[in-house]
Length: 330
Image (tube, rainbow, N blue to C red):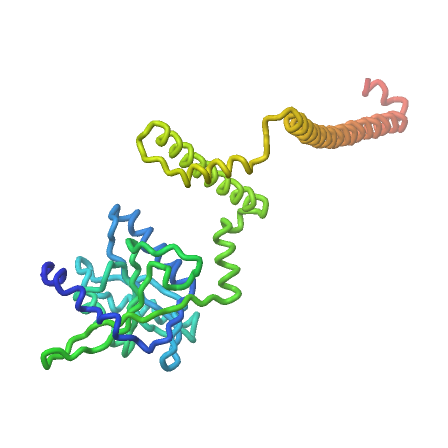
């Protein structure tokens, strides 16, 4: 069975010459949900390729489809090829109560390419949607580095089901459907908030983290250049005069940092910064000391007032006694 799947897995997807007329939009939330689902299962199962299965929720208007949300699916105990339909219906109805406009439009999994196993799973979802879509996360896919950030640079591929007639026989196959990433204003704010570390991060912390990442990257690249020059001097790699001239020009463009004027100016600015920090610390300590003195004075003043009132009350009590009472109250 495995050998047959490995042999025919390429034929499950029609060639790129066959295009899909589907207009598909993918929102950021499904991307985050599927990635989190895979990462969590890797940690729980201690496996690099766990079985991932989930449902896609969205809207469909003719050939225009939007994937807005997802939820995880369960399988029958001990059977990864059988979907737990009771769990699916229960979760779908729960999401329907909260998001009435979202419908079940397909399912997602993690794989390099669709296989006959995915065809068998796909047929179990046709009862909930006439043409359910398949969204595949391909974590091993190496995307090309490009300045044009589009949906196609993500390790995701969407497939639309269709029927192929071959040798007078019909079979279920997939057509790759291009998609684009579409975000709303609320989604952009949420993604930006998540990228900055959530609510526990301040703007200063985000700025410092960005600066730290930039300095770290600069340090790593400088080490690469130093290692290259070291290997050239040692004769371990051939000499590239163009690269060496570029390095020489780069070094010559740097400002001189070892002359006496630069060192004096640097020391002056460094001392100014240290003095400012010291003054800030002294001001803070003085404020704390003032608060402590004020609280001490309030406490001492309150204790003196209480003792004065007590003495006065005792004196008034003795003045109100009868003369014969002195013998009873020494």
